[in-house]
Length: 325
Image (cartoon, rainbow, N blue to C red; front, side, top):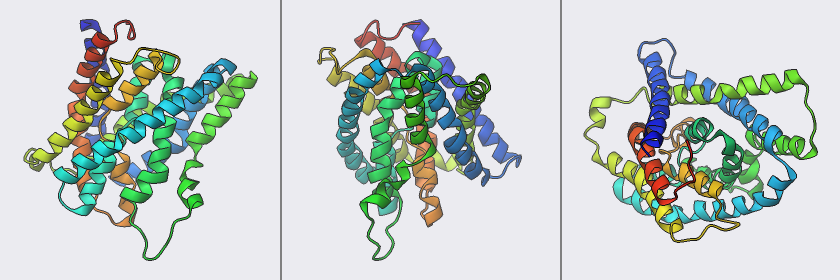
């Protein structure tokens, strides 16, 4: 177990070092804070889709297709079940309607994308594809409900249609999920240079995601942050309460065709991640003050360096044999 703790702690230290690099690049004026928009576009349009495309091309098979729906169903249940907790704590620990909505979103949807992809790809690369499938319902809930309801202000009198709500789902990441799944299931052999390009771009995902995190939170006054105790309580809810509830509930449910080892590993990885960064950059173009979300994101990411290894240690004690190093 000590080996697991040290391995996870080492990986978190690597990721946090990259966050610090991004933070220092802004502080020393090597890059402007506006570069976060460019880096975010690179992540969402090129690097994350490439990692997903390569993973699905290599690993998605007919057998995987037959079990994917179980992952999706259980993940959807988990995503919806966590929403009441987010509403309860988000409304009680933040002041101001906008800050409450930002905090609620951050608690509902952890950083299962940038941080989650990086952690899983480093610690459990053999189950990365299952993890991506597992997160699809979380992405869907975030795009269809979270963003339009909690982050993006309603325009006066404008009524959103169902199509306008699901339109954000048609993005490079989901397109690459479908394309990679088709290539994998059909056994299509791609040219070597295509595979090399996809692999090279996918390898850039984790480091750039962490540098982007540092760039996004660089405007925060660290001294003022120490005094804001509410941020620490909300971070503990996201980093400790969610994964503890997950472990407690599934410790009493026998493993079966739905509750599989990879489902449990994917679930704990999503639950243990810090506050999602979408709450920081998504509402900014609409004039929303995202300072509270950025502060919460920074605190939760710093604390996650220790909480994620500890949660993984507890998880391996409750579910022995699932994590092997």
